[in-house]
Image (tube, rainbow, N blue to C red; front, side, top):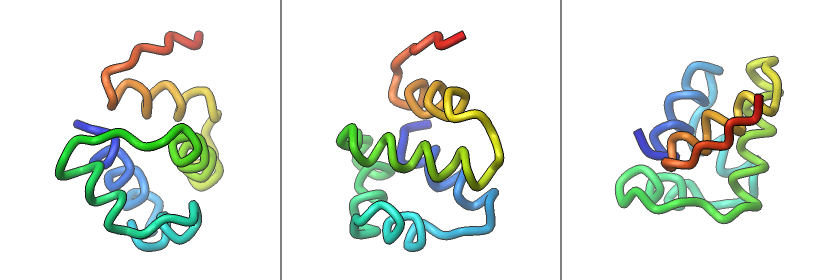
Length: 80
């Protein structure tokens, strides 16, 4: 799973859409689709904003979301 797919999966669980998420972070939905289809990674600004949004929506610790998001890009943060 890449970061774009992680975003889609997690935002869908929260009852929102990719379009909604893109609007929240000030991006075009096609950017998130690009992360999914091309496996590219987001700029740090988008990564952090998206993780914050997911943590708030899901009422989960931000550190947990940051760790999962990073893992979807092949990065092991090992926060705990």
